[in-house]
Length: 360
Ligand code: FES
Ligand SMILES: [Fe+2]
Image 1 (cartoon, rainbow, N blue to C red):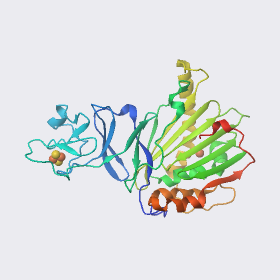
Image 2: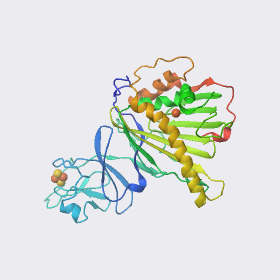
Image 3: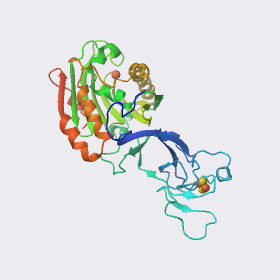
Image 4: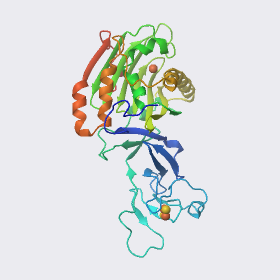
């Protein structure tokens, strides 16, 4: 296991960006303890608004974990989530969704200012709860994750594959976006015909054309247009057996430990997807997961590549590793990293011929 410091990424152990933290369907008004970015949180759905709230886990009064308790009468009496706030199981202080304490049972006088926990910016979309993590506590620097296809009834919604945690730094996962040479050995792509990367601020895109043993019929080609939206997740628009969009999310749990998810949105041939389309989409998601598992097996067992012995048949790892640093350093330095990498880097082939795959 290697840390952000071992990779020389920058000042922060954990990067800035939108990150997946939970599946929306599982989130209820029963608080869920979570650990990401080397800290503990409590996540819950407010009873009043139904909105997801993410707070730092420990009560400022005496340090109780706000989300882990089954025996306190606060919990047994159904007071744990109270409106859109949460009550500490120990002495019943209530914190609003903004993290400020707004009730201390029995208190005479005013609530101290220090009676608050940090409330984190969350966003719910595409069946996912996302958090904007920022070591500088700034506003989100780019848009929260969305996909127009999610709201199009022709597309079959994904189910999220939770792949659990890996003792691997996100760097090793992100390297994949520029990894042209793994497609043959890992995915059975005999010869990649076209491969380019485009770096643009917090986004890096890979466009690839080639045969694929898992995702297209023999003799046909797979077209993918894959974009990392910051360091936390990619969306890959894919023309294979079915038009589809892969989600791969990676979120740091501790420095050098990563939680990963996979999902696949599949377009049906009907204006409104029918029951039988769901079965087809699920089967295709299984195939996509099997392809991703081929990468995953390598990551789970490799030693950290603190330095890559890069050769000219690789993609531009050296640029991707500079791009990734922008998220581990103060945003005042962001432009420096972007200036060094922004633009298109073509590794193979002549032209990109599938403009309808552009992610925009
Ligand atoms: S420790 Fe939370 S209210 Fe006392
Ligand atoms: Fe791969």
